[in-house]
Length: 119
Image (cartoon, rainbow, N blue to C red; front, side):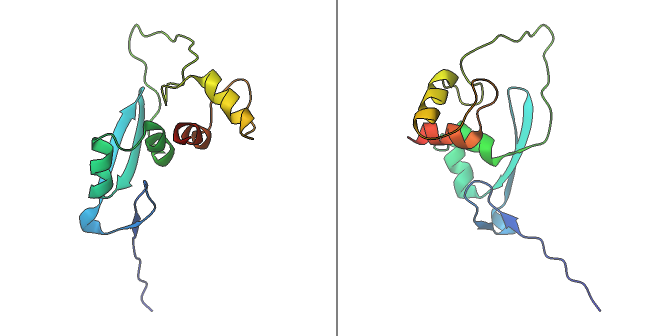
């Protein structure tokens, strides 16, 4: 008996099937954290021209590396979410007003950031 293994690629940005000839494997770093995603040439062009929000890229990417610290770098508390550049207090207020359950502290889930940005 023979075994056949088939590998299929899916676009991480829009969920559509990818042909091997249209596959772009993208590795990127945001705030010292490494991410990767697979996408089509069309979606890669949308990303490169700024038509895909950063929050979407963060939500759709796989984290492949940890945070790195630069020598002499110190953390500073901020009300802005580093992933999206938006005011986290405003996001939390909006989320509660729109039926999302969200704590006063901690990371804001990507789907809430996306909903806030898409409003």
